[in-house]
Length: 340
Ligand code: DAH
Image (cartoon, rainbow, N blue to C red; front, side):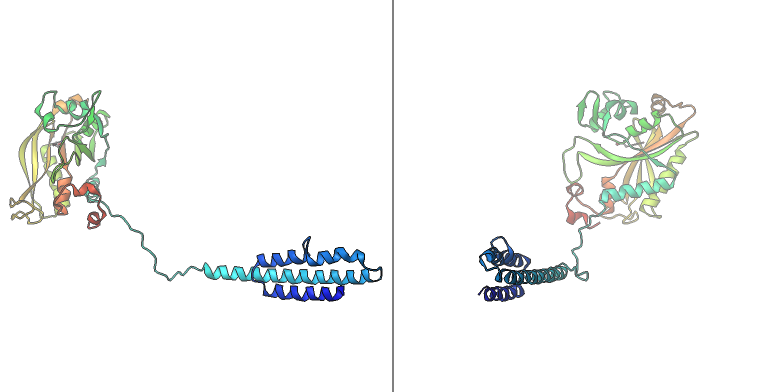
């Protein structure tokens, strides 16, 4: 009787094992047969009721059956594991030939391009770049540049006063003073950076814009040096055919002072929309550093002289890239920026 039952259990189990499709199913089969309440286990437990003669015989068969089933279970488990591994390898295969999603790359901002270009030109002429703070002392921004308390230039450069003698710098010129005060001569620097004025925003004005400052201090620096340098710079920046002209002007921190115009780089001076049919474009302010400014910064104006220049960068970038509205430069609209 028991033997028949065992045979039946064995055959059924083998079938179940063969048909099982997952390790979990296999575990369930194992528990059902060999677990604490499993079919084989309960047969083992009932051996005590058999006769002395039958007990070892049946016991042996039960143990053999158990051994066989365990082996079958283990084999099937290995098979299922291998299959699962194979499947996951197939599923997780990366198709290296599939077209990828190109990451969206940014572009160099037109302002940055202009600054880089100017830096490169002056570095090529042996200049170093210098940096200055955007939150500046009123003294550096005005007084030390010979712009006294009630000087009208302060109105023209109306700015954001922060109290305690600090303001947002209205020009990059204070970097001149900081550099001179360091006391290391000669000086040959340019200093690009952001400046601020209390202007309303429109197509040509912004409360925040960029300038680049230049300063050269050494013995025997003359106006000829200034003109030669700035002409070479203009030709390098705007093309070999560019002509320059210097118009007298006034800046409190230079004497004499001038503004430099360049022939329009679009029409070569003939007259076009870009230069408003004038043929010339105003590029920068410049002059020989005022002896008073030199002395205030601790430099002997009898021994040393120098020249300085300052240039707004937005207008230059707008002319160069034919940008009609200044506001576009600050909106960071990717569609706009990716054109350049
Ligand atoms: N700082 C002047 C401005 O913002 C520009 C300028 C003119 C700078 C003449 C200079 C200079 O260094 O020599 O209008």
